[in-house]
Length: 323
Ligand SMILES: [Zn+2]
Image (cartoon, rainbow, N blue to C red; front, side):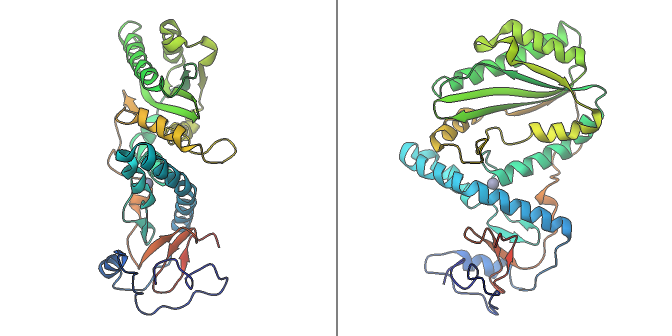
């Protein structure tokens, strides 16, 4: 009997005790993992904070799975050499121990890993951003483009950002401090790449926008650009906002974006630097604030798509299950 089959969940009945590890189906490698990680079947009670964190991760994994599966199936047909990247996401956070998962795919389309990235950036730069004297949220856009145009448009955006920020620093004499993020909204046949930046100082931020308009990358229009002050006490929220996944995988209605559009956008962003901080030191670049700080303990529980949570193979208990 494999994981997540009848008896573990979904029947509406109480979980069925399973005193010994179940036998994995032929060809499944999960039993070996159980033997290595779950010699002790006891579970460790979760604190409310841990439970919230695990519940959120379950929600994000549930939202990511159909998108990753659609991307995988699309790539198998259209870009077979890239299908493996999407398959990694299907296995992301597959094993939960305590409130931590053993593996993360770290792919940009994975909402579980995107949240970890938000935590990492908050841990690294949250303190610096909070100390900015006059934080501004700058949005720089270009007109929408086709998928075929997207790589060239991204090249131009990054080149103009580089020349703009250099000119503001060297020619205009501002100490440019902040963090920038490259993003792209994707829909079939239409892509909206743009930059969000948190910058210190209204004058410096305004100068960046002016120079962006002078360069007019890809025919950018002044009305497409925006700069607005951020209350210093909410600067961390702004950082979390700009730290989100670089391409939204769900549309405004919460439905998955078409896989060919997502694949085009993520492929165009591949190997490009999405986040760049400047003039700020990382407080703790390697310290992950999110799931990676969880204590490890208790039994290994295995992700079950149908349950929307991680199933304890010994007790049948579902952690963070929607049911
Ligand atoms: Zn992931």
